[in-house]
Length: 124
Image (cartoon, rainbow, N blue to C red; front, side, top):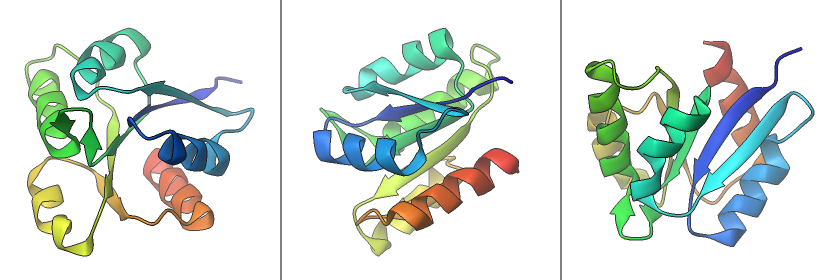
């Protein structure tokens, strides 16, 4: 059985621990990068099924990373993947819609809801 891969981009150890605890399993592996600038190269190397982007990843935000991924995919330089943004507040949904993300989740992270969101995205 193939393992589904998730790439999490966050510089927060707490966010990493929460996401990893909520979604990692024998069928789903979670890799991590801590800088927004690392995401495109990591997606190219790992070809994850899902990329989860925190709002702030060092000095590059999740919105900018999402747009960069979609641009690279649009030029066929990266394989397609789903993108989930971890928003800091409900008001950020407006920009999330413009970023090219497939879905978003407003923090604080509820493990059950997050796991459900991940499963729904991967199944769609």
